[in-house]
Image (cartoon, rainbow, N blue to C red; front, side, top):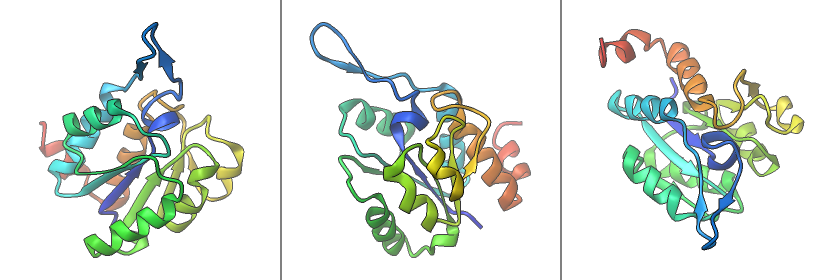
Length: 163
């Protein structure tokens, strides 16, 4: 059973664009459907972590809004962070699903029980991850988590949160 989700931000939770306004302030677009499923996953008693290569106050804000307890930014070695978090939580790699879209996600995606990449993730990830139908920022995290919920046999548990 998958108990932990590892989420990349740019290119997965967002479309990968980094927009700066005239003051040099960064903005990002997040999909509300991703937020809904992340909050639901947490309510189901599971874990979520963000592991991203960049640092951004926007990511901190979004994580706080979604009540994601584990946020790792400015990470060069995502696999190392994932392994340390699993050790802390007492989880094995087969209990983890992750999503990433670029080469810095490769080793982490190869290590976890279920690796996913958006439709527009780099082609090198196709060898180690399930390619999803949606592109980054277009509810691709929602698509991933729905697959994990079905894999876990928790569809009814998920639905019972809302209906």
